Image (cartoon, rainbow, N blue to C red; front, side, top):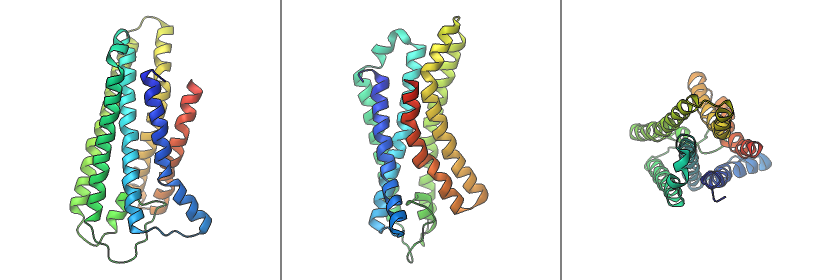
Length: 240
């Protein structure tokens, strides 16, 4: 656990537990009691923590991609570059950015007014669904929401793609077949988790945009909110 990879992996496991804990307990209680009611205060709290831990998941996967990039492309300087101070700093920055992003989105929801008792077609308080049900003007909310999704989510994805483009270039330059295999197997677990997370997330929003079915969107969202975090430890455990 002193190596950077296991440091980030332990934090990813903790964040995945917190991420699922924001939605799964309430969902199970609703199924058990057949009551699908949540207060406004609890809904805003759930939105805050869902965005917080979801954002941390994205940032941590990006940091882990950088860690694999340094390990494969600069192996002799790996311990110097990925020192405990830098690892701690990367984790701290991820927490700060995600907390500020989550706080801003929650405050933007608080400024909205709602006419009557709301029925959210989802198994948790999903930000986009809640904004669409508001009676007041939502242009600013939509602008901020999509701008930050593109900036933070797109920026993280670009960082991951850049890291792996450099990794693939470095692997192609290796003369030893065994060396190529070892380098690729080092990234296999992380690449599987990244692919699972981004493919399910994009799949949910693209399918919901195409079908306009809230029920199918809610069912599909279980993939990245519940199934993916549960599979992450299994993927890394099998690899180790």
